[in-house]
Length: 290
Length: 290
Image (cartoon, rainbow over all chains, first blue to last red; front, side):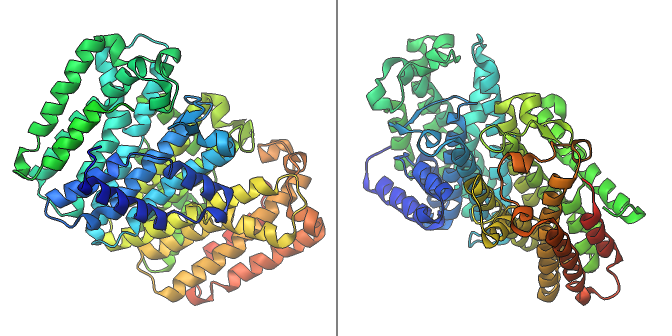
């Protein structure tokens, strides 16, 4: 993430809004688990994208805050369920015990369910025109559902231990990671009532950085350290997951990250000169070490 | 369920709509698991209530069909996740292998997630005025979330193996079962743009039949047979779950079911003479054997 005042201001907006939207930890152990997983040092890339695209489309960033938080809640729920023993069986998440390690499987399952539900409640109760809410919610639920993120998670499970061809890997990641990042960008435009041309530019940008993000994940899994990653390095190889490194080799993967980042920037031309924030975000995602 | 032409027509409407809303089984194993769990002989009590309250409030029942299906999807998801090994660990559901037995834990987890997500997508894409959609969605998501159904599931887990006082048991069931039944009734009114007085009557009806429903469940767990129930009789006692039978005794529980059914009927007075369908539904729920 670009370490500048703009990012910090957006991240703070998002964190304060999430603080207010999530139920108090003392309500119940499930509510505690929800907070634990949302406030565990996540980079807030998706909600920051939502706010920035809203700004780029001429809206006040705050207008898109409910949508931004909903996207982040869905991201957090997906990580909780992904880490469960019946899925990836990961004990660590961002250097801390995974939700089910800390709170037990049943509470982690329910915390994930509750975050997904709260995400949609947050959209339904957003203080925006009902037509805007409905449009955003339709986009977000389709992105998160069986044809989007969940479909990608399922393909990921099916791919496990197999030698998967590149096109299948691309489809998996476009669904598993790409769809929610795309929704994050598009929802910012929706909150600002943007014209279709800008929505399409946002989606193109998201597709490029989404894939670059996944490639960097795979590269770091090979080259990174457990301390920096907050999860065991080499865990994908250990889990016999197909990655781009296996399909492309590490050097070609790095070239691809560079190309995708350039593509992402190029797709923003419709927004004129106003895109330095997203340019540095794209760069920082490409160059990140965790 | 009252075995009459009205119920059959409503059930058919709901089944046809669910058929169209759910993704084709051949799309993926998760989609197959979604269908397996939705089309497993469920009684469709909740969606039928949605359609009937819409009719009672002067709307065409079809108007409420998307909301009715959303409620049923949330019900189906909650059963899939409830049956998982880390929750109730039930192998049987309505006499058939539970979703995770049939498709494995990971696919069952994802099928539940996908049904919950599709439920909200169904609300967001309902062909109704956006303001109606937003009102219904806010009600449904609050009913299903941490303060409603999920909160009740968590209390249920906490109560397990303990001697729970009656008030706690009532709160657990009001959340776990009552909130979604209430949302089912209220959403029917919402679809018909009903006045507040009717919404309140629907909620009061729902609270009474919801509790009666749970009492009958507990009674059948003691007196029923595994064949009729489709799950092992006595499983609650086996799981050391606190039930009303433990708190009240079986005779007092039966009296309570009768009283609640009378209360449910009384709360419908605002709808005039038009309530025979709901009267017989309340009776049939009280007298059911599975």
